[in-house]
Length: 268
Length: 280
Ligand SMILES: [Zn+2]
Image (cartoon, rainbow over all chains, first blue to last red; front, side):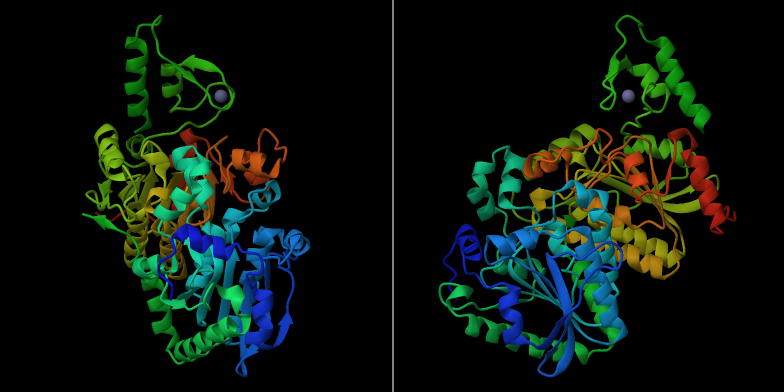
């Protein structure tokens, strides 16, 4: 792995045109994918997709944030910024997975929640909170993988899991570097400086206990070899799903709670 | 209890020099009123009924039975997980000026004799943003309540995540929501009282998970901020956007309760859920 890059340089790789999205990965990792639509309350969000598929023959539920590969796709998926109905669809599919004893695989790839009037009116705060709480006690294994960027509550809505993996160049942040710089320094142009001090890389996440595994990307980034990166993701998932499915569910839930419970730095 | 509070304020009001009396400017109606009048009304705007911000101590005073509050984790202080420039210094300064250790005070108290675990966020401390200490204290409060079979009342106020703690602050959303979830699965009652302002990661975690969600009148409730929405989406927003009444209309607030009725309302709600006076 190439550890010489700064966080800002990794972020540039994540934003590069041609970076694979979940739509590229699904056919190479899974078979029999059936997309399931809608939250049953309001509509069908296009920033979060979900459905059933097989991973090495085993039925699984996939829930994924989708980036567009061009402007048209990005308009359709709102640049991967979910609306409340996206989180609610995710929860519906997670509950369905629990009922039918399928493990859940979440792919995270979002700059963050949608800062818009309709998202507030339809309660995106409540929708994210509900997912976080319900995923914490969902009685089936949950594995989440950050493909590119994972921003704020919009990412965490799919991020409560038994194990979090990150592609090598992926990042996880409480707010975008621009947001961080403009809020704390009143100067959005200091985004690069912010990105480099925020500690947002995959290695940082492992150190904080937020992520467990880093999935290696081909030299130069995931876009350079789609087959290879898909193979790496599949290999990780196959082993991890096997391991988590073999666990007693009460032990698994306890470990899931403990994973988040212990993150925090304080004295007393 | 309420009477005590009134008397203290009245004394101050009557004892003050009328001409040089300090004033209060309401952030909602922009009206300017004598500060003493505002304080006499428990920091409620006499004109538009906006319910202003209280310190944790003031909140305890108007909600808990006198002398009943026992604080949890009073010494807990945050570290500096991402070595953010000046974060430690900023905190030391705030501890000095506010007398707080961080943005939340948690503990156990009785309300009209009924025991409950309570948590109060104090916006004077870094806009009550949620970092390690806020997350840990809330998780412990819920775990304690779960173990003892006690109800929890959280008075929320927050600007959101404590960005100076980086990703660690985001994870507090999972930590607190998880603790709420386990308290709930055990049959626990959780009442949230949303106070001004409840926004960001706190709205997207424990503040939105109450069995009953109460809001004080005219307070701000939201996830994304108004200015962010206006600047990034260029959307026109109604004047009452994200106010308590607006959020109730959209289905996210059970009841809006005036501050002067809050203590009685909470005691009644606890009683309706089978909680009674502590046996002595
Ligand atoms: Zn007013």
